[in-house]
Length: 221
Image (cartoon, rainbow, N blue to C red; front, side, top):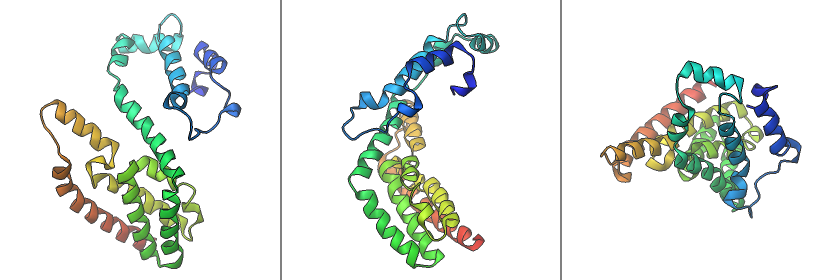
């Protein structure tokens, strides 16, 4: 984002106010939520500050084309959903620190390294389906980013991870951010989607699609 704003006043202010990349550090277990979200808060504040047309020529052109006040777009941002999505990564880091991920990985890797491609694909698919419904599919994939390259057949495993993390989001209502967004919007319009009601359709659909995906990927491999 900053690179795309080369030469602009916004870029200069971002470089002046935000820490340099070399000084950045990973989120620590003891950090408060406010400390973890501070960089994103600063960047969002700068963008809003420079949304005035007389301060940023590029934004002046965009506003002229859009014919809208930027406040209209800012008012329609779902801040609660953004906070929820950011919190998922905080939960992911905490879940990783408990050692549960290492325990799951160790057992999955044992099946992957000592078994056939079929056994490996089934094991990885099961792990991704479990993690995706515990901490959501995007954080689940990030937790496996260092594990996949150590497997005997990383090309196949990457494809299984991509397929499984996508289909696993259909298993339960909490399995995907998209599910929660749809459920929230539906409830606001008087249609309530219950956990059990969703699972009656989601479980069989997910099992069938995961099985189909494993067969296709292993045969193509």
